[in-house]
Length: 206
Image (cartoon, rainbow, N blue to C red; front, side, top):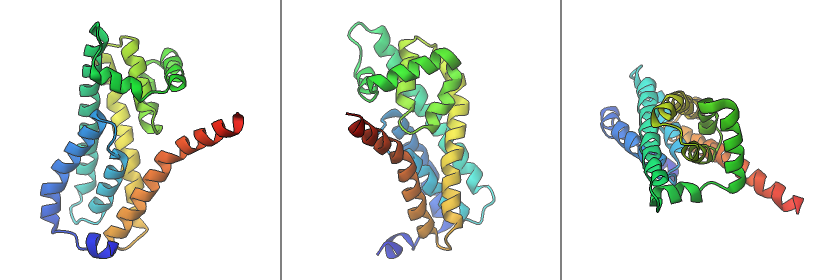
């Protein structure tokens, strides 16, 4: 069934015309509203690009994903700054705060004090690490320009990592749909494993 649905991909020109703008919008939205599995999207796009004839497909996916992630981060940070400056806060700041556990926020603030904006790179690569670090930057009143300078390499590293997962999944299977399934599964495993480990450790520690 999966092979019948995913295996019959549209022509390459259609994939590019629809795929790149869709990837940009979804990744930017996922960075702005952290509910979209953006890592899986980038990995899947990497698989499709791997099987295309154009030698620039992988490079375009990398550029689109990193640019979209950066745009989403900057918009979210700017909205969060407005909430920090406001006496009543904002729904965006409350959304960010609600997704950062107190212990993760404390760790992020400590790492931010020790390493400065460089911690943004690690926060993008660690599952569920981006929001606590962003909130720590907001509460520390980090200027938007400084945040942007640290976020550029963070988004580049993030896009490269998840695209590499897609390339790995795509290279192991002859059909694109098989690579997409493998890449999505591997991405979800990488993203979900730390949370499962934390819950398991917390359960046995009580």
